[in-house]
Image 1: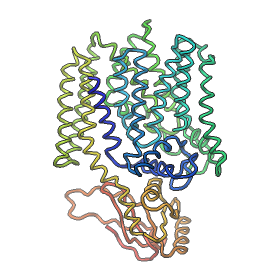
Image 2 (image 1 turned 90 degrees about the vertical axis):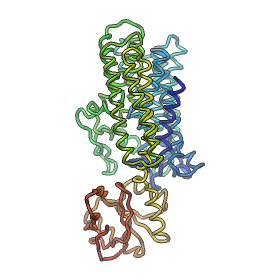
Image 3 (image 1 turned 180 degrees about the horizontal axis):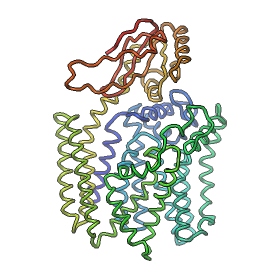
Image 4 (image 1 turned 180 degrees about the vertical axis):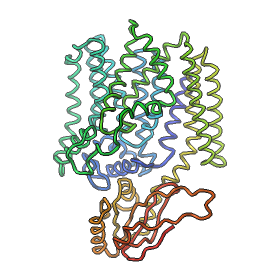
Length: 562
């Protein structure tokens, strides 16, 4: 059974990582940075379209740049390191659970960690969050080894592993890597009354290794062009500015984007944990009922809660909020499920059975949703692949329902295999269709052909536009940044006078899907600022249900373009 589970997880990862192109938001930007890193001379500071991008340290881009340099700027090559990150996350959480609750719990924890909706999204997405999650998973393993060590040597090894992992995590996504392990250790020290643990030299000796890793990179940044300014953005604007408003230019006001709201993470948490949400609730219920237990292995529950709830509280108080910010806390929830799975082996109670069968219903609902999506997007042979996956998922879900009362191990494995069948069969075909809506390389190459040999000006471009033009069209362009107002229009007119034979590229609002009962596609009039800036729309580029761009030249006549 273990081999089947491993194969199912591996195939579901590979479908998500290697079976689709770069998707917005963020992936085109991350791809361009990694592509630049594959050939730029200075490796200390990431570059987006040739300009310093100081939101994240460079380790993720270093690793993605290696396969991109060998295989080209393909989506699958950029995501090749993601497979390593996913394996590290599963291995770290699995070994952590196995230490506290046995081998079976380790398998459950690795499987849950790999298939939470949020952790799966992180694993297959080209971004700094996948290596961050891997680093935090390994760091938590080291923290567990060090905190519950029986000897000084074991304690040193555990905490040293934690610091090495945190150093790598820092080089992926700044000090965000420290939050979950640090809060877990402090929480456990308070909960178990072991204040002396915070004073042990073994806990801090690994800081020397971590400091050597981080400061080496800082030294190279500082001695590069505009080093002090880059370090300010890395450590002040992008770190402190995520939690509170700081004095900075508008483009560096990170607290103004992705605004948080009271209870946001708690409200969205069930979706992050899908499809194992009900199992987490069942585990929390059982943990509460056994809270006065003096059993040695109840510390697994304490560690699970310490690795998840404090971070959830801190993030709820931050100025910004995105689902991926909570990803480093997911190992705690996976560990809690693993403990519960081991506890119910002698026999589940009524609520445990209900949780398993409720999860079967959730997986069946997911299968129904995939069926609709696959029916709308797949065809012929590809529809057959989707249907095979759906059929397998439905059969396995039924087996899980029947086994939930007496064969809980079989029920859990059947649910996992059913969910993986959805991520492999129908998901792969949905990805194919969505790729046609996200084929930004096609737009960029069209722009490259139509503007060959002439200057190109990007008008109020977002990061995605800058990235795709840089990676697929040309690495040298003129940019007129927004916001679009009277002063901006004057700048555009000035640029058009200095390059009268140049082309201008502008992002347009996404066009609504064409409804079947409309006999004729709607026409979209040129934005008013085209005429104000003395620009004429000569060509358009669009993707189905995706991005639309207008190519313009200097001129006065305006027409409606379909």
